Image (cartoon, rainbow, N blue to C red; front, side, top):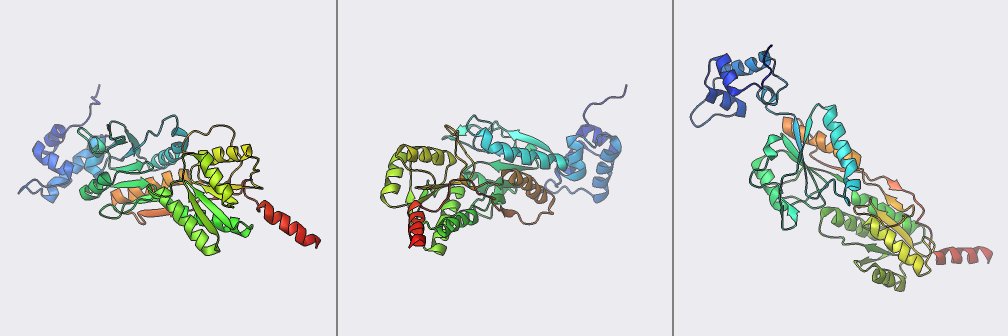
Length: 352
């Protein structure tokens, strides 16, 4: 019976009449010191791989195509955790679908230790170089990791927009500024003159982008705005109610659910007394039955697919647009309406 063991460098050297060191140099696509590989020698080694019948083997793929068709996936937070699995699942589905469509395998990089509460890509024994490139997932990415990836020239793509880290960072992100600005404009068109942003609005790029869209929408419409931070949502609601705010845009979906529940406890109806708009899907567990919130969806599935496309282009040199922002589809929902006082004044005006 014919042997089916994996092809080795020693086998290739014996088949081509060259040294194993020469095969190693060809395998790594480089010369060592003063040693130069003649083009005909390199071609002979590659031809031996093609003729050997082991082309599907990862080593043979590297010899023949200079990459393994393996895509790494690294999460700065657990992507299958109890609180995060629901949020990350569409990203992973998109990544898997596109990888399958182009004949690539996925390598989930999970061995990185947690340092100061965060995972770090580069650690002793890391296996990131087993992959041709890597897709990065996480609310915030470590700037030092990004700088090293850029410096070392390892192809990577962030799912989510990232600021420069010693150079432009390849990413596929969501166009939060445009979506949030459009929500502000919709609320203003219904008569809301005072609005509040509830959330951090700074730190990770995704939060900063939402805030920039809120400010841009306010500047375009002339509405008055406030910025309210938690974690005491009862105090946030009190501040909102006392300041005459009639519409709130909430950064975290679960906070919107809690805020609507607190409003009901104070006798405030959503959306008649207070319109509540959400800025994406839940990133942590939601307690209780949520309302049909007005807001937008993050194109998570498409972001995953296009991240693989961008990474593949970086690996083979054919890529264009290594930085992409995808539109966020608006959700009509049932939590945005004209403020009650405007409804009352219109009714009185119509009867005059």
